Length: 367
Ligand SMILES: *Cc1c(COP(=O)(O)O)cnc(C)c1O
Image (cartoon, rainbow, N blue to C red; front, side, top):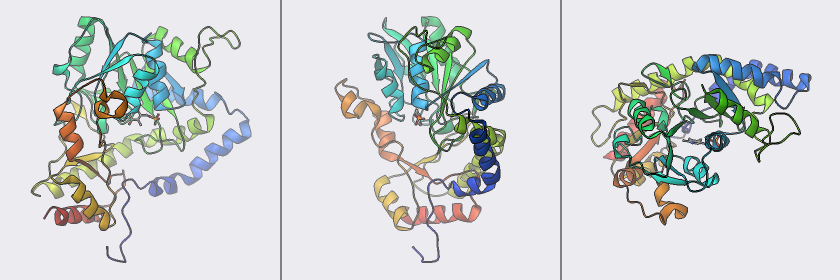
């Protein structure tokens, strides 16, 4: 690496925090002054605003994306003896949530173009209760066939939207198509808090009521607890911060798409690079810009030596993790993706010169 060149992180959060510094500080101080730290007016206001943005009836703030998945599954009455279909090519939390409620994950191989679960490979059994499509890397799953299959077999659909806030499918926001949407506000997600946070969305009044009850120890009325629930609220300070960031999300997603377009242009004739596919039914919001390359580990090391951080999401598909290995799955397309994928640096305001440096180093690494 040339001494004058700054290392390039996979995600640079500094431009965002610099731009929002005064507004975020004012929001935090507002909560401190109000003294309402748990479920105060900021949480309510954020829930109202985010539901209006997404175009859904209910939005319920929780402590994390993982909790949104767990509470969503519980609200759908999924538990021991039930099977839930999902993709192996996701962050562990998706499968973990299924296991946490006592159900069994059933892994279906992926479409190697979109990295999303291949709906045509789903096999429904009498034990199947739900499907969790994961909109991986910011690209929507082809939802119409998922919803048709769910309708045919009377299954619930829980969208894992942790990586795809503000993405859409045929003009509708992801997370509003199934019975429930589960979002994460982990700081590096497209809409990130400055700490943990999550959200459940639904258009179903009964599911919403159950989720609201489960997030506060299973009580609709305080101290009249009905079921064993969770302590899982969206923190008021995080809600206030998210209220600052929500109005800027369209601009941020447009920025990510602009960065993706330039990568596509710069990389289009580079031999060996397999570019991300963008399905025409969705607006991809590029949580990650994930390419496929030969000799992936060597390429990653060569980039690291040039001061360029990349990530492998995910080196081990869920079905090959120790706790699920015993289920005996062989899912060759997910396994192949895990061996070839490389996520390049991307953030909404990434400058062209920085992208050019990444591409230059990648070309060298591939030679
Ligand atoms: C980040 C993530 C989660 C978990 O969200 P947390 O807020 O970290 O609990 C779940 N699913 C996917 C696909 C994710 O990327």
